Image (tube, rainbow, N blue to C red; front, side, top):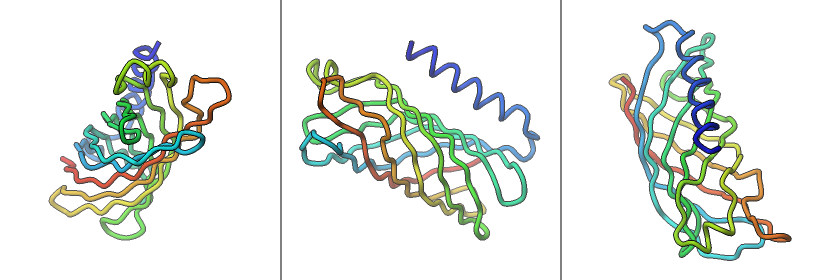
Length: 175
């Protein structure tokens, strides 16, 4: 099921990319640090980990772009880590040359958990929203910061509310 949903999202994202003019569309890679934790009933110390992945920047009109991404992201809390393939679809608006504000929905597919107990007590799919900013240098180097807020309860335990939350601080390159 996870593979089918991930494949469908990827096909849609890259289908949109195929409709854009190839000379305007840009691909990129990014990586950085995750500072994550859970909100809700799960009380734990936050964790520091990493994310890595790729993106497609699609110009839509003027300063407005759409940026689908596919990221491998280690998240969770101290002694309760989860790994996801996260697929954000970010709307980007350039407020000035190089500086963009971003926001959009995200779907994440759990690919690993710290242990079997954590795997069994969490759902395999998470939905959320992300918001942030990025600055891109003319040579393609980019810096970004994003806040991710989980909107769905990822706990598979009745009566327990647990959502992902985190800040990503990253570096990337568009080519």
